[in-house]
Length: 446
Ligand SMILES: Nc1ncnc2c1ncn2[C@@H]1O[C@H](COP(=O)(O)OP(=O)(O)OP(=O)(O)O)[C@@H](O)[C@H]1O
Image 1 (cartoon, rainbow, N blue to C red):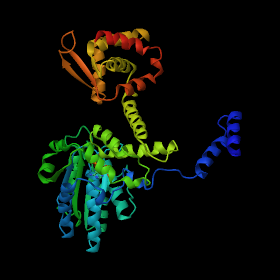
Image 2 (cartoon, protein in one colour):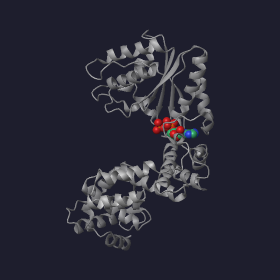
Image 3 (cartoon, protein in one colour):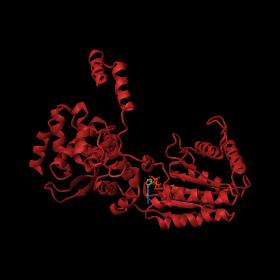
Image 4 (tube, protein in one colour):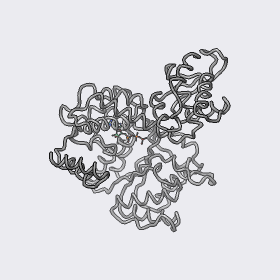
């Protein structure tokens, strides 16, 4: 008690004093850990959960198990191509099966392992960088030092060291290559880097670089990447395709239900899982986003000192996810693009989420006058708004119905209009604009 009054004193006397800060920290660290979580790992996006927590993917698990079974017979497993939208269990299922195979292989004295690499997260998408990363991860799995610098060593030399490690440490190895289509390489080269990488990996055994049985599993949202494979890769690379579709709300309920024990008993109130699943289904049926939302709701409950996660925590978590998504897109826009989008959002706000372009242009002109900005042509304003469409904030369609001035564009918001408005209004350049004035003008003209 005394401590807290001392600390508030310290803050008044000396703003930013470390004394005040450290007592806030001490209070949190010394206090009882009040948390709704029991086993947070279960809702960590990187955890590979056991098979009994994987829902509705029997067909895919079976296809993967059939392929990997060959390892146990001393054969090279066929290459796999796992495709489908984000967060649909591609990585989870293949790693779960690979872990099982690893256990069984060990019992048979076979040294099997898998090396998973995501190419999207690399800062450069060249073949050289990809081979370096593959080598680095493989060395980690083998428990040896990857002694090759990123620069100053040829790509060939990197391959040589990679194959040396593979050959010395594994009887059978699967490379799980996530988002390989990001590996575009140098634009001047006519064959994309991923095509060259696949070719090399598929030829490693035939060219006797290794005795290890090597195969690949490609995980992608974009199976069309195959159309750009070079002809030699195309003829040597024939994976078994496994499709993953997105989840509906009921499937997400089943998935989330199997992670209930991430929370303490009775700390998830009724309806929470269903609400998270409903938001998840709106978010393209992506289980990752649904699990993240459930965890975020738990964090909010913790921050509020609540012992139970309730629907209001889920709503708050979802609002913040939506706001961050909108901020990511809108935050990077130029002022003129923001003015155009703001006009569209204000019109949509009084018209159930849709905005006809002629009304938007009037609203835009009014906004520019209020804030003393240069007024661009209608064509430019439409094209500025269409830019937001490419990021998925809204959709635009050409129509001649529903509004008196002939053929025009109709903008339909995908993201909640309030989130767009709130995000733009945080920019101080918008302070002089009176949104209600624009809203009432728009309402009269629709
Ligand atoms: N059928 C399922 N049952 C249980 N959990 C699932 C299921 N599908 C996905 N998940 C969970 O959702 C999250 C995302 O899954 P995963 O990483 O496998 O997606 P992905 O299809 O590989 O996505 P991306 O294409 O973005 O790499 C993980 O936390 C995973 O555990």
